[in-house]
Structure formats: structure tokens, C-alpha cells
Image (cartoon, rainbow, N blue to C red; front, side, top):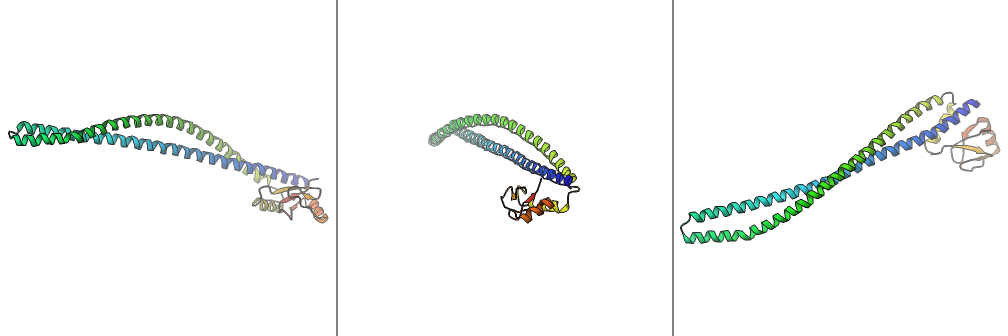
Length: 232
């Protein structure tokens, strides 16, 4: 019985390591998820910069087209003047050229502003792209390291599961059931008898309960419902 009892205590100790390993796996998985989210957020931020660049390029293209339309219209009017013999028609055409001057100048001013804006946005885009590439390299490295660590922990976790099955052999079923039930709702499900008290909750057991525990070696604390054991 003593060997079986020692095996039970070893199983409990191994299970504590098992739970610690489970928490490490959860934390590692959370780290990987957060790194991937961080990478997505960086890419999303860079996408916004790309949108600004696309809009600046489009604005410049639209203004260039608008100025091209003005130039074509002026050339068309000038040709019409050359071909017109009527002074009246010439004056009308000349007035039309004059009327185009102000909107053309505004379009030229807008074009210069668009060129400056495109230059600034392009510079910002290039800087962000360089930063993004460095950050992605850094995050990819962290993700790889986190995945490698996760795989190591997972391998150890699977080994623990197999060892638990082996270590559970020959242990009385009532001990295992009692332990599994306590483990399902208590983080530290096992306590030791110190004197005549539960080490964790401090509950004082009756003389009869102490005698029963010393005989059975393992029972449930009537106060905190942990598995309490007696070890001489």
C-alpha cells in the first residue's frame, strides 16, 4: 500500500507540473495570436498609407487631365481665330480665351499643391514601407520563436499525458475519482494533514476523522472538499 500511496503522491506532483505546462501552452498560444494581430494591425495601417498615396496620384492625374482639356480648348480657339475673318467672331473667341485664364490658373495652383502633396505622401509611404518591412521581419522572427517554444511545450505535454496513464495504474479507483472530482473545481485540490488540521483551509478534524484518514491514507476534507492525505 505504501508504494501505491507514494505513486499517488507522485501522480499529484506530476499533475501540478501538468497544469503548469497547460498554462504555459495557453500563454504561448496567446502570445502567438497577439503577435499575429499586431502584424495585421501594422499591415492595416500601411494599407491606409497606400490609400492616401493612391488618392494623391489620382488627384494629380485628374488635375493634369483638366489642364490638358484647358490646353486643347485654347488651341482649338486659337485655330478658330486664325481661320475666322469676322472681327466680331474673333472678339468673341478672344473673350472665351480670357475666360479660361482664371480657372486654368486655379487648376495650375491645384496641380502644384497636388504635386507637393504627392511628394509628401510618397515619402511617408516609402518610410512606412521600410518600417513595415523591418517590423514584419522582427514579428515573423518572434512568431517563429513562439511557435518553436509551443511545439516543445506540446511535445512535453503529450509525454505528460502518457506518463499520467502509466502512473495511474494500480492506484485505487476511489482515490483517482476523489482526486479527479476535486481537481475539476479546485486549482490546488490536494492538501496534507498537519497535526489534526487540513494544511490549506485549517479545518480541525475530529479524532475519529483523523483515525479514519490515517487508516485510509486519503479522504475528502469536509470543509474545503480537497483531497486530504496523511503521510507519516
